[in-house]
Image 1 (tube, one colour):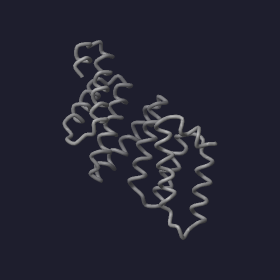
Image 2 (cartoon, one colour):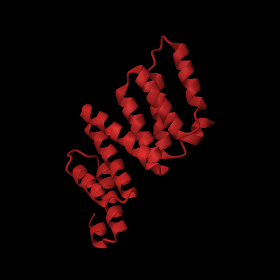
Image 3 (cartoon, helix red, strand yellow):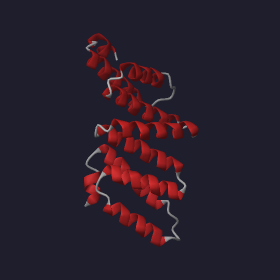
Image 4 (cartoon, helix red, strand yellow):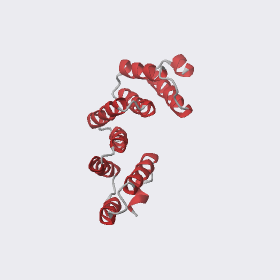
Length: 168
């Protein structure tokens, strides 16, 4: 099954969940659209294709939050693949949408991904600034706080600053 291949990673599993939620938002009086969307879902085998189609579908249905979540997922997939230019474009666009919607939780998640991207690009200053900015945002979840600490520890470790890495 295609969905089994997509759910092999946590990001793929979240994406499949988001796809299912989006399909459920298609009006019940339109079974043909629902069937077409489900058929498209079953044809998808690669996370970046699936997320791209989800972005298109969310735009067609007027679901900006879902579109931005798909954009974040796509940015992360590209980051995992080392496609940093595409990752940055999608993450920055998702961040702009999250800021417009004043969605602090999503902003934190996107900023953490941008911190990861900065580490991958060896942009120490940008990564440190992002982590500092995220630390100052109130109301983060325990998981988000842990991701900040892990990101800082990885950054300092990469620089050979073992004391700072241990303090993170």
